[in-house]
Length: 168
Image 1 (cartoon, rainbow, N blue to C red):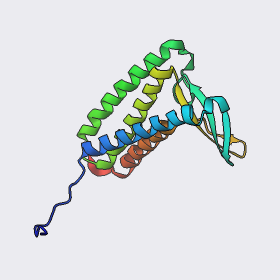
Image 2: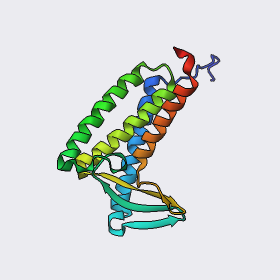
Image 3: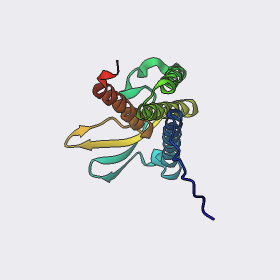
């Protein structure tokens, strides 16, 4: 027999959006890196053209974004990991306080990407980067899904800030 009472749609909480995007980004990031290293064997192939303007190119990034601060040596993996986890903790506080679900989701994506790269640093001593975009002599630095999620999350935060100036 059918229940005659209407059911309320459950809404995802802010924390739910943060956890969802965190888990989605972290899971996809680690899965793609595992496949690149062990299934596709990109370290053995070095670079594979997939289509014009897109290659898989193996890069072990011992520095941070765009190779910055690469000269800190082996201590870099610990320094960068501790700093990243500290930032993740601060972003978690922000996510818990934001009233906007898209901001909570963006923060979750940034946090998931940062933790994915920390896992690489601790496991391999470097971040696994492999997506290489290029065209007409222009080449974007090689990156991974975690980097893309961090960039997209930051873009959402910037757009939110630009378009919601009346919140005081």
